[in-house]
Amino acid sequence: MLIVMRPDATAQDIERVNDEIRRRGWQPHAISGGTRTAIGITGNPGAVEPEPFRVLPGVADAVPVSQPFKLVSREVKPDDTTIQLGNLVLGGKTIHIMAGPCSVESHEQIIGTAKAVKKSGATMLRGGAFKPRTSPYEFQGLKGDGLALLAEARKETGLRVITEAKDTATLAAVAEVTDIIQIGARNMQNFSLLEAAGELRKPIMLKRGLSASIKELLMAAEYIVARGNTQVILCERGIRTFETMTRNTFDLNAIPMLKALSHLPVWADPSHAVGVRKAVPAMMRAAIAAGADGLIVEVHPDPPRAKSDGAQSLDFSEFDKVMAEVRAVAGALGRDVARLE
Ligand code: PEP
Ligand code: MN
Image 1 (cartoon, rainbow, N blue to C red):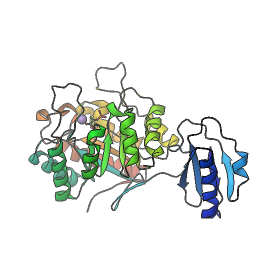
Image 2 (image 1 turned 90 degrees about the horizontal axis):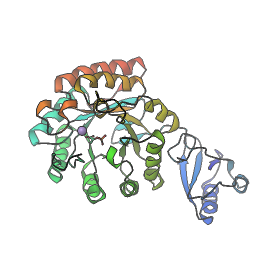
Image 3 (image 1 turned 180 degrees about the vertical axis):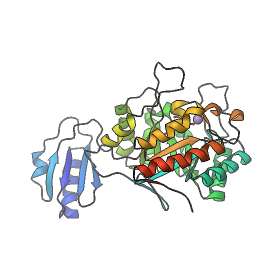
Image 4 (image 1 turned 60 degrees about the vertical axis):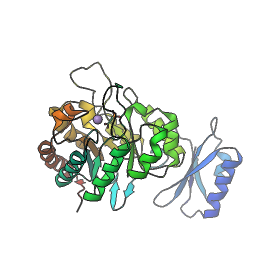
């Protein structure tokens, strides 16, 4: 149920509705629109009777929400959510590109990559410090040292930073350093991690699970937003199918579907989605054409020597070349690609 307040509703009217919701043992969630406030309800075990709310002062309407996801849905909040990172706005008309290695490996590697991707037009640096690897014998990341190197790269270049929080034990340490916390595909339904991320007031990028439906991704995002952290980016990163020539199958469909179903910014990760370096530039262009608000791309100074995901990482010149194409596709759609000064 969504309680839509009239444009002239007072703060008192809104508080009265909140009280009525709480009195029933449910939780109100105020969602401010351009001209009026709406109040979402969660915690209700069954359908909500609209009439007792419709008669309250300042209430324009009480409308049922048809989807199981509520706070992340466009039904509840028609306007796009944007995320402010200093002077950068993510999720608006301007597209942002995050780029960097799969894993932070060394000082030279991360600083060198940061400078190169900035020059090509990225606004954010990616790099895993805590790596959730399929095999326990593979490189697990530099952990705390990796976070420190990301902080140094930010200081040196002005790029914002995104890195993954692999578990609740390291979430606080990651949150302290990073500008956006990545929750990886393997953790999309780690509900303890989602709940803990929901308690933070820091942007989260939630990646689609390996075999998760669009609805499951949105329900996972709902866990974070229901705890009060409304700054969530959804990321399509490919799903498992019968295909073996590519690492995953890039579900381009998900991009316009997520944009239609949710107000949250929608990102794409063409690197993990296809997993084959030669195919990554085409999928970057395709993701922008499909309406993505941004991309996260793996770039490495020497992909064959990367400690993880070298096969899908672009080198500096490949990244530079495709960025010009990405800007052209964005321009054809009336969007631009952000650049740092
Ligand atoms: C990554 O970004 O390096 C990563 C591990 O991604 P995903 O969780 O999508 O597999
Ligand atoms: Mn990777």
